[in-house]
Each structure stands twice: as C-alpha cells, then as structure tokens.
Length: 242
Length: 152
Image (tube, rainbow over all chains, first blue to last red; front, side):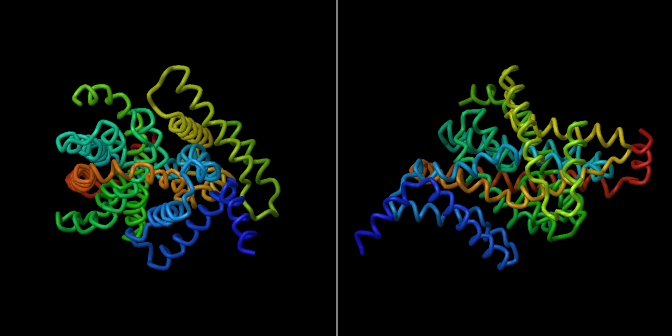
C-alpha cells in the first residue's frame, strides 16, 4: 500500500500537470484569504501563493525547472494579458482629458523617481548589476516589468518579486504618507498610487473612491508604457555608471 | 481596427451565450503580441514585444473610437473577454514569482540595498507624484478643458 502510494507520488511529481494544478490551487486559496481579509495589501495573493508553493517545492524536493514545466502554461498567458491592458488604459483615457496638465507633470517625474531612484540607491549601496537591472522596472505592472527586465539584463523572476513588494509598500504606506503630506485631492492621490505602486496601489485607490481609482488606473497604464519606452533606451547610460 | 469589429460582431452574434467569447479575443491578443514581437525583433527595438502589441491595440481602439465618434466605447465582446483574462491577472505572475526560490542566496546577500531601494524610491515616487499633481490645482477649470478636447 505504502509502496503503491509512493509510486503514484513519484509519477505525479514528474507530471507537468502537477505544477499546473498546484499553482491554480495555491492561488485560489490565497485569493480566497485575500478577499476574506478585505483585500488588505499585506494579504496579497501572489505573495502568499509564491511563499506556499516555494515551501511545497522545498519540502518535496521538486526542482523549479520541473515545476515550471507545468506552470509555464499559465506563464505564457502573460504576453496576451499585457496586450489586453490596452483596454482598461483606453477606458481610462476620459480621465486624462480632465487632468492632463497635472498628469503631464506628475507622472513622468514619479516614473523617473521610482525607477532611477531605486537604481541610484541600489548602486550606492553596492548591489550587483543584475539586481539593479531587476529593480529598475519594479514600479510598473508585472507583465510589463518582466518584459523590461529581460530587455535590460535583469532577472524577470526577481523583478516579479520586487514588483509585488513595491506594490505592498505603496499600498500599505502610500495613503498615510499622502495624508501626512496634506495631499487630499482624489486625483493626486490616485495618480501617485497608480504611478508608483501599479495594480496593488490601484486596488487601494479604488478603496478610497471611484475618482481616485480611475486616476490610479490611468497612471498605472501610462507609467507602464512610459517605463517600457524609456528604461531600455536610458539603460546603456546607466550601465556605464556601474 | 476592422478586424476587431469583425471579431466582435461574429462573437456577439450568438446573443444567448452568457460566457465571454474568449477564443476570438485571445486570437486577437496573440496576433497583436506576435506583431509586436516581430516589430521588436525586426527593428531591434528595446521595447518588449507585448508592450508594442499593447500600444498597437490601444491605437486600434483610438482610431476605431475616433471613426465611430464614440470615444469611450470598447467593443463589448473585447471588453468582457479581456476582463475575464485580466480579472485573474495576478495568477499569471505566480509561476515566475516562484522562481525567486532560485535566487534566495542573492536576496539574502543584498537584502539591505534591495530593501532600501524598494522602500525609499517607492515612498519618494508617491510623495513627488501626489504633491506635483496637487500643485496643479483641483480641476483647473475642467469644464473648459473638456470643451477644448471635445472640439478636436
């Protein structure tokens, strides 16, 4: 009986279906907890499903490569999902009409501070070149950030984690920071959260109200686009400093 | 633009199906992504292929809306299907996220620069973005702005 079970286990652990099923189940469980906790940024479902899956791989001794054989079927959908981001961005364009002056000033500045600020700090504090390249796109939505990381010589998997951590920092500390600075304008709060903390900041912004949320969605889309257009072009100059 | 319209018309033709027409829209998204990848490689562009695809779809939507005079209307089939895909966008990051297990040593070694860079740059970006946006003033006569844009 025990032998039979372990045979089945050995067979299943090799099957790509294992990684795929495990990923979906872990995410569903984490997402359920997240919703149950009122979508608090600290309960981020990606963070907790990654932690849970990493523990499972560690305990079972299954390598990441073997896990990815199954999980890649989810991973490939990142490309079409990035293209699909055009739809919410297009819908948010109405917001741009109302506040384009402020956005034209605030958004590029925020994008540069978020990206090159992180690069500068990591450089000064002595991080490795790969780490710095993986940090550079951390303020934008994961599919775009991973694409940029690949282009500029970072590690997309590391970037995915940095993006999530950035979102958590922005989602948890962003709103109290803005209140502390006396920023009460819904548009300003939305732009700040969306530009610096992508989807997680945007989700937080929608908690404050629809106007804040709409501005955050727009800022998230524009920040992603702007970072993807600028960072790979600027990168050779940054690399020269390393 | 024309292809979006046809895709969506054929997809919404079957009015009784409550499920979004995921397959034609997935095909559309893949075509835009492929075109983006092709452009990126052909011209050695530094921008990721899917982002060029996203820009392409965005332009297609803008041209379509401009032609139809309905600036904010997204084809309903496209909207529903992309919502279905983006509704679980977070799931798509998980396989890559688990890849962090292969870099744990690096993370531990550079924990301080990484933590400082993430924390400080994110808070600075939020502060700068919020303060600059607020400095322009609430709305700055939004009514006039809208008229201006509407006439274009």
